[in-house]
Length: 172
Image (cartoon, rainbow, N blue to C red; front, side, top):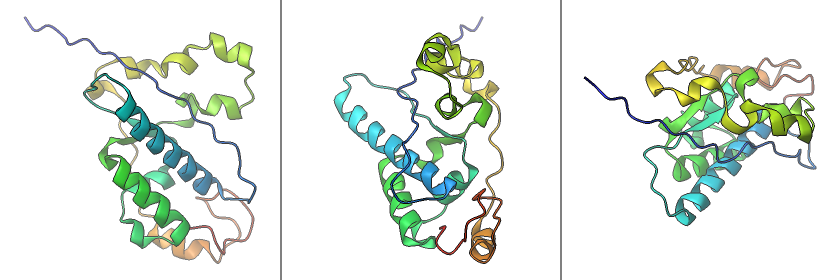
């Protein structure tokens, strides 16, 4: 008879960053949110008096995951500096993809008011599968190699990764 371990998950924060003064592409905004999450992890891991078996970081951006899975020197300075910071602060293998519909942080960007958020289980506990053993979690999508897309992105006006129709001269 095998006794199952108790699974306890804690959502430390649902991050939704306010937009910066300078216009940034959606992937760059997602990367800034990942930097904020990495910084919160660093501060909280020092300050909390409790040991955790494992940390997991979640993003709904496959572009951010692709950036993190490569050396920072591969990218232009804006992305490179942030990728290097995240890679130095966290373990890259602990970063995972979550679908946008299951991402609690996206509730804010969908216009949920605070009264609605206070009653939503997704906001407080995350998706149902997070409470299960890790082997039963949805599998991460294959992270694309965006290096070729990056080269082409700067000359196009409608990039599938940037989801914008602005000029691509300084996206990455």
